[in-house]
Image (cartoon, rainbow, N blue to C red; front, side, top):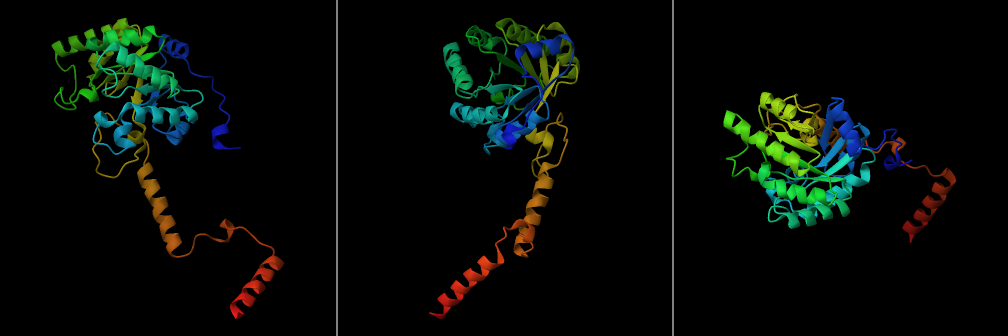
Length: 296
């Protein structure tokens, strides 16, 4: 049986599932995926939510930052992820330029991501300024995951990748953003690069889950970029402070590929075990034909 047919005994994660986890204080697990294999392993590992994040611009497409990826590319990756995901709740990121102009533009983009990308919800960045946009999308029946704190799509206006909410005034603005996003109808929100104490207090003031990334363990759940936490990158690459490497996929992959290269060069591979047999009489008959051909 093919890998895509692997039986998964878990029930499908829905918004009601996530709400129940939140009410029972069970942390929500979220991870990014950008294609069929990364989604397949995340779903098999039992992740609650799989996010097709715009971080795929760098980790899958080799772009400089998230501002380069466009809506059509995000939809393509969402579609690939959705084919592999059987039980996790799936969310697609709205990329920069696909939702900021007006709420109607955002709704059109969200509809495309859900309809063509086959995911269950969308994520977009922004606080109070994005509340009308979030409300418009949720009124159309599309679940929205908010994103406050460090919003990478706006890194230039924020002065780079800087921790947010480090002052009392900054923390107050973050809380106002969180409350506005909640009021607009988000079912949850990502809180990125915020002091743990501030993220905890904001979480306590809300009635929806917070998903932390660089925001401490006082949030309702956590999210990491899969490539980062797997260690699937070359040595020396910069990693944010909050990333924990749970593996060394780059090292293991390179070791395997280098071994394959060496075995091909030395003719160790393929060995007899990796070849298909032929009956001796058939081989002899063919060799006779070749011998005759060579005497002509």
